[in-house]
Length: 382
Image (cartoon, rainbow, N blue to C red; front, side, top):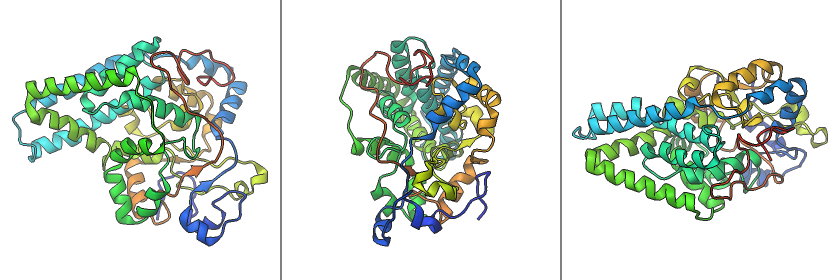
């Protein structure tokens, strides 16, 4: 099957005997754990330092992007308007369903990724302003989400691939039971629920003031919207959120970012070489326009304090570091290949036992990976 990845591929499943880097596994153990295990640190820190050494001017790209707050306000307004206009439209009708899929899901996926930007303190310089604005961006999503997303996501950056810390990783139970075409189709259809529920099964966050504020603000908004636009208006927003994380073109980024579609190079199989396995994939296609350039994912993980508008410039300046990295050419085809290719699935993730730590335990103050931190050898990471 043709791959959505721009580099040549070899079947990861056909390489099961070497999926644990530098470790000899018995077939029985491989049946229960077929992730790509590595014992090197994640590659972004190393590449970040190399890029800064070669192009020190990239550090000037860090900092908030004022445009973000205006786009968020626009999209929130569009969703509230659509909810009001659909207040008397039956949910099980083509006008309602098509609006929810074409406009609503795209808009709410945009807001998911706006919250992603804001979690890195890239909308305002003030940490408090970013926390509060993330709650505002959360309103059309219908479910309180932004306060919990931030610490889980920052831990994902600080602990990429670390077993028990990175909640973006599928659990062995998910990978085992969804290891089929139907299982992967189920995962892609309901992946928004997996991303919402999985973190709570990996580790729980303490309830803080920002979580309470997020919950109160969200349910107050939901109640007001239901009174103003009826149950159908609120149902439109909830359905939009579900479809945004289901079989929608923009939802392809969830799978495209870190699932391994091309296997590790043979030299990486020897732990003595200490060669990192490519575990982050970028996408440079047109859907980035709707998703805050989240497709430039290697660039984002290398420099999380660079906002979405300046990631293309980062790629231009340091192109020699990105030109040869594996990339996807289509998010739609990513979903198709993930479901139908028997050699791609939930097992195809890079995992490591050690490194990283939990991030984001504070209430309002500036924490890890924020845009306002001093830019040193590892910009955006304290």
